[in-house]
Image (cartoon, rainbow, N blue to C red; front, side, top):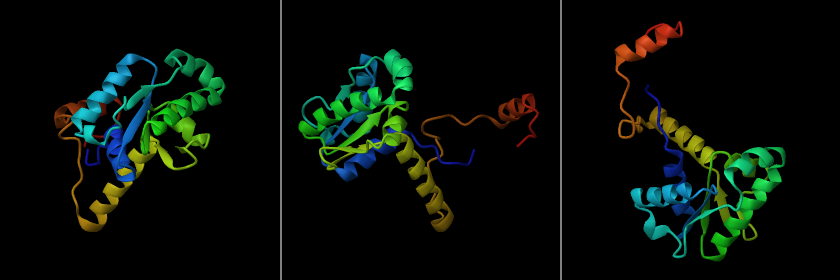
Length: 174
C-alpha cells in the first residue's frame, strides 16, 4: 500500500521531546508494559530525554478493571492516569505520553490534556499518530517528499498473496 505507516508511540515520544527536555510515559498496570516502553525509549534513542527517576509508570488500576469498571465509569481511568502523570511531572517530566490506546482517547475526551496547571502536556498517541500521518501526506502532496511506508517495520505483502486475499473477499485485484 502506498500510504504512510506511523508507529504511534514512536511519533508521540519523539514529538514529546519537542515539547519538553524531559519526558515520561503513563501506561497500563501490568509490568510487561513498563518494560515495553523502556525498550521503546532505548530503541528510539530517547533515553537522554527521560526523567532520571523511573520515566515509565504504570497506573494503579489493573487492565481488567480498566476494561470493565473503567468503561462504565471513565473517570476511574482518567483519575488513575492523572495521578501517575502528576507524579511524573513532580519528578521533572515536561511532556508525558499516555501509553495506552484505551486510556488515551478516554483521557482526551474527558479533557485531561495536561497536568501541573496546564504546564505539562499529556499526549494522546492516537491523535499524534493521525496528525503525523496527515502532515506526511501533505508534505508528499505539496512537496513531493517521500514518506515512510513501513518497509523498515513490515515486509510488503507479495502481490500474488494480496490478490489472493482480495479475491477471498470478492474484491478486484490490484
